[in-house]
Image (spheres, one colour):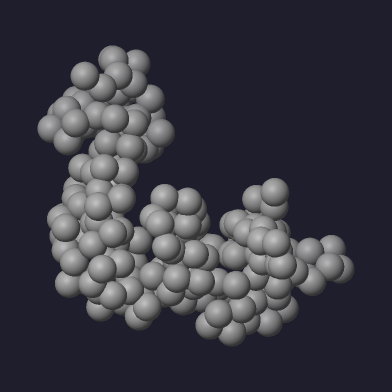
Length: 203
């Protein structure tokens, strides 16, 4: 398994990039969401990757963020009928945050507007992923609609981390606020999450 590539970006198009890793050129297919985050050709980058092995091919897919790769894996491994190409199209057509919000809220219309995703596929995505996206997706989508300052963003990230660990929404919010009051404004997201976990796991 190839977890990431770290090297120099040689060339890039909206769907395919080449990364020079110590003299070896690796090609990777990427979504538009990652293309927008790429550095200029000639600059260094770290590309998170997923190798998809089929009987007739070995294809490397690349992502600039862990959230993009996580969603890609979730789509191809969980939703019946969705392969790597469709998953890449979904990532190119909607942000990770908006996707999670659409699934959590059962928004078939938002998903069916993505190229390559019809109404039936959108319905299947919601049915098969709703339990996996859950409260974290709804919270993240709601938070994205607000303009957060740096301090609020930190608290929001800590809440999302706790939701992913199984905390209920109110429980996560209250725990993070309590930890912030104890640790003070210099506490990092990791400090807040660690303090919440020390007080006890999700109920």
